[in-house]
Length: 151
Image (cartoon, rainbow, N blue to C red; front, side, top):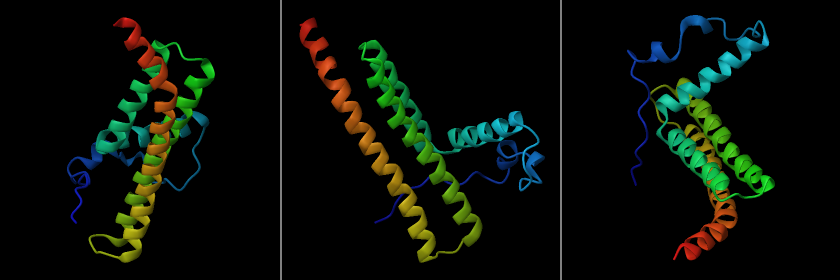
């Protein structure tokens, strides 16, 4: 069974996404602002290069927007936000693990590399399914009630 994955960034595009400012990336960031800048660079990189991350961001925004529109209680919106945030965080970790594995094994196949990548992807899948379940439990009843009242 073949699986399509997003290709890695091409060598000519990589410099625009990963700047040379991180030449000494092993050093501690000079201040809090720089730390946030590096974190934002990771989020930006994932958004630009990872189709699934963009999908998860869109679904997260839709779920929270629908929660506000349906006037759910604050705690319900928070639960949807937390589960959606978990999906996004795990997608970022998945991207980091995949990048690290690719750096390690280069263009060769290794069973342990496959296991690492598959397990990281599995963690994202489980969190996405749980987020979907939570959103369905919280959003469907008021959404159905709204549709029925409009008829």
